[in-house]
Picture 1 (cartoon, rainbow, N blue to C red):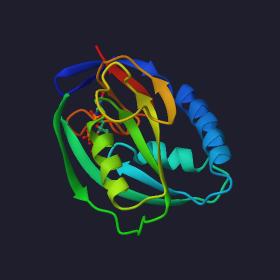
Picture 2: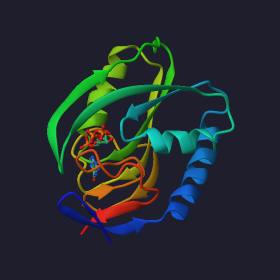
Picture 3: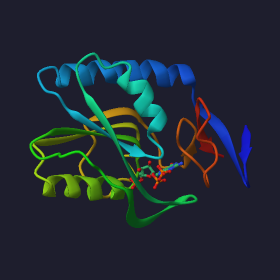
Picture 4: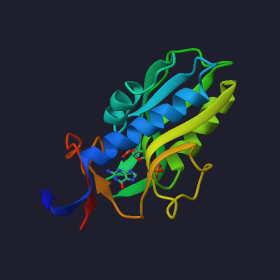
Length: 175
Ligand SMILES: O=P(O)(O)OC[C@H]1O[C@H](OP(=O)(O)OP(=O)(O)O)[C@H](O)[C@@H]1O
Ligand SMILES: Nc1nc2[nH]cnc2c(=O)[nH]1
């Protein structure tokens, strides 16, 4: 068990499980994009660790960029997505793969999908390490999912509680 500020968290997905699942995702994504040169758009902050590990398992040419948005405050979504750091690449006619650490309510994803559609992208797919199917109310189901998890708050491996816990190698669940 670990404590972050006022909350206790229990170990949930080990570093080994994360790494081996990411290798499988990398293989799937490589196959799916073998004839295209997609632009991978990593959604900061939470996705930095997933992105760094995933792209090293991909064996086809990809371009990688970062966008920063935020919708979560402490343990809950605010229902609104704030765009903090925009995109400089021209995405018109591109195949886009959005990289997320987690799809929860789908609020962030819906916002991003609409923004990319408006920019004339050729295709938009989504890879997420974690997915909470019971919590998702918006957007379509992600195309590549690492782990489907129950509707409980998690931290670690990029995911934070009030800014803390992102450096943890494994994923923890709120006790
Ligand atoms: O499906 P949703 O309910 O929209 O939740 C998913 C979003 O929440 C987290 O971001 P957050 O807003 O916490 O920002 P962060 O990545 O900077 O921590 C996560 O990285 C996703 O982008
Ligand atoms: N840290 C963290 N961020 C989230 N953003 C959306 N869901 C979650 C979650 O369960 N944990």
